[in-house]
Each structure stands twice: as structure tokens, then as C-alpha cells.
Image (cartoon, rainbow, N blue to C red):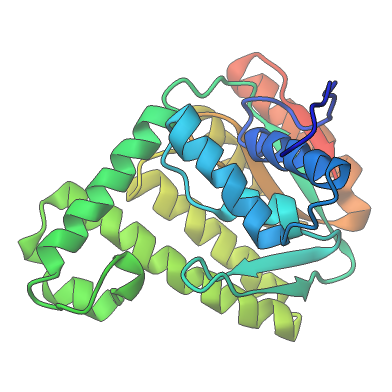
Length: 269
């Protein structure tokens, strides 16, 4: 049996900003109870305990990514996750660049319900494609060639959703190889491609996020930018030359305030 505990929680992850504050809370509590009771739980097991709380208690049918990185992430490294096998690897980030998070300050009222809707649409696409490819169990098993060959079998919205997931999976695999080779410029290009796919195919972006990402296209010292989280508000993540981080903060704040009349929260890592 677990021993009882009175727990006070504090943190610096903004709530409701798309930075996985819920996963951070879940894993913090799990780790505290693990140490208190000397359970020595495996970090992957901890991640899935957090996911279960998200899925079964909160009701958001999220994947494992947020809990996985909260459990296994390390500073200065990207975490690659294979959600089918639970294998993972850490890839060092390239020196000379920093991650800057820009919070739109827009609440994500639609994020949970639309996330579940997107999951359902992706499952529908798999069901339609499975008669042609009996071995597929998810869009992870679908290639762009397979999708192109049966594009007309899918309703337009399902085809777009599927295209985002299939191409995003390809971008992730390509990103791992680029980071291993230290090709940070091409990695940044994939960040922009990812945002365009989230904006147009998955349709989970919003005006505020698009203003922030589009503004960086005119900043030569920003290598990549994209929304993060479930969308409809929250934050962008930006890959910025380290010695230009303060310049970026000033310019992106001016851009956002000039377009929308309100100020974003900005975090430099």
C-alpha cells in the first residue's frame, strides 16, 4: 500500500499554454510518491501512469509524448520516442542556438475537444485505408505513396488529417538524422514545414500563432518556428541564434503587440 502524503505543488510551467503543464504535474506527483514509497518505478512505467490519468480521468485522448518527455527528457538534448515499441534515444542539440518560447496568452478552449476529434478523424482514415492495406493498424504504417494512391477514397478532411500525420512522422525521422549530423539549418526548415501542415492540413493553429510564426520568416537569425501543443492558442517554439536571443525577444514582442495590441509572455532557454 502507498503511504499517505500531503503535497504542496509549485512550478514555473505556464498552465494552459501548450507546454505540457498537465504532464509535468502528473510526473512530479508520481515521482514524489515513487520516492516516498521506495517503489523504484521504471521511468517508462511512470510515463504511462501519467497518460492513464490524462486519458481515463481528464478524458483527453492524448498520446504518450508529453508524459514521456517529462519522465525521460534531459537538458540540451532532443528526445526521440517510438510510441509503438517505447524505445527512445537522446540526440544532443547543436551549440550556438537557443530555444525561445513565445506564449500567445490565448486560452485554448477548443484544444481538448478538437484533439479528440482529430484522433477520431485519423482513426476513420485508417479504417478506410485498411481494406487496401490489411496490415496497417494506424497512420504510422501509411506512407505518402500509399496515401497518394488512395487519396480519392478519403473525404477531403480525412485526407488532409492523414497527410499531416504521415508527413509529420516523416519529418520526425528526418529531423533525427539531421540533428545527428549537426545540420541545424535543415532541421529549422522542417519546423516551418511542420507548422504549415498543422495550420492547413490538421487545422489546429490560430491567428495568434500564425502571426508569431510568420513574423520570424523575416528574421534571418531565426532558423525555425512552429506551434507546440494541441493548438488553438498556446505557444510557438523558436530556434534562434544564441547571441541574437535578446534581439528576437524585442522584435517578436513588437510584432505581436503591433498586430494584436497585447503582449506575449516569452521564455528563453
